[in-house]
Length: 201
Image (cartoon, rainbow, N blue to C red; front, side, top):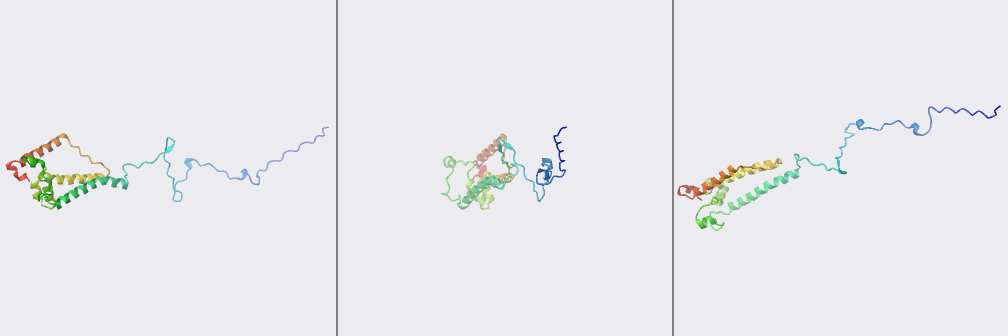
């Protein structure tokens, strides 16, 4: 007869273990991208990080069609600077009368040949234009007087396009340049002829 004692049967495990341990922690689920909490006033959405390029964070670039205030001021600087320079020149001519000799140099072509060039009378035209005498301005130099109005129109277009962030492009075909040259040539010839004395300064 075997006198070895029979081993005791193992005790059943406690179905509801007590104490502290991982068995008492609540069951959690790791969140996935599709389980993200929607943005609310209490939980604002975090902006996405810029994409990585060559292992570094890419720097966001401001779109060209949304210029900042600094860029707009910089673009307006050139047309406003041109306007300031032209205004200063006109103010000087309006103050120092070119009809009085000794204030401005004489046209070299007129001094050497006695022939009026297309620019002769331009200073007197500018002086009359500034003082409000449009008839005297046209009589001194009609081409220059028309040029004042043309400059004003182009400058306004330039300013508007600079405000909108667009460059000023004036593309004239060769025919326009030839036509402008022909007008200046005819104007120069006529103002030096007896019947064109009305165009002479």
